[in-house]
Length: 268
Image (cartoon, rainbow, N blue to C red; front, side, top):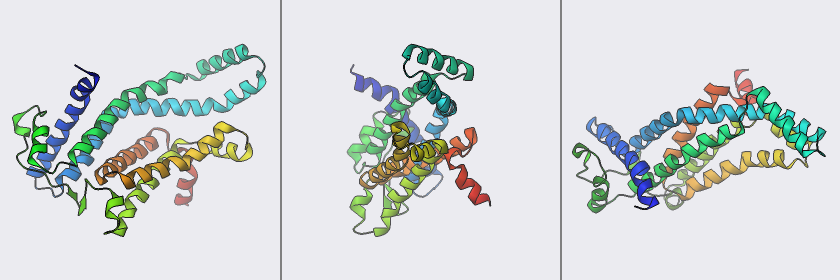
């Protein structure tokens, strides 16, 4: 058995089963646009499953941000003594209870699940024939989940299988999807980045790390917005749900972060 087959059995197939179960429940309840809402619910289920891992990653990243100014001072103070520099940095980590690897492990755990979810969504939003439904049925665990008809891939009139780039000629307002997607991603990115980083990039124009982080604050949302323009609407629906959940989780764990100035203005 190859790696792809193992990946499918361990990650993709369970996600398909959850999605179909949610779809069947919503369909039986008479909920309109059941497939679209089942994608939203599936994304929330995945985020709940990943909640402890993402929380550990957020808390670890927050601790690293707090010690970053101290690390800069240590590097400047011992710039000619790399050994002493490393010793002082490790001492700093111990004093603040920081584990540099703590933010990597949760991400490693998340990646295969997120990739499997992406693969599943690409498959389900493109199903337009009984033959394709048969492929889905072949991996379902329970007979009660079997699908006997092609599901409706429209969500409030938008075809989940088509991309905004294909639909824009007939519906110019479809451009709002990538714009909204980029805005949500920008808000999350802003919350994850302390104001000190942006200020440092302005003051120290030769600070590559700070400048790169400041640029990524804008580049990443634009990139995500572009992807949501050229990829199926169903994926934008998933990504926006995923990002909104991330914004709420970030706020509950460490507050508004780099977006604190925005929140303060709103409160005034």
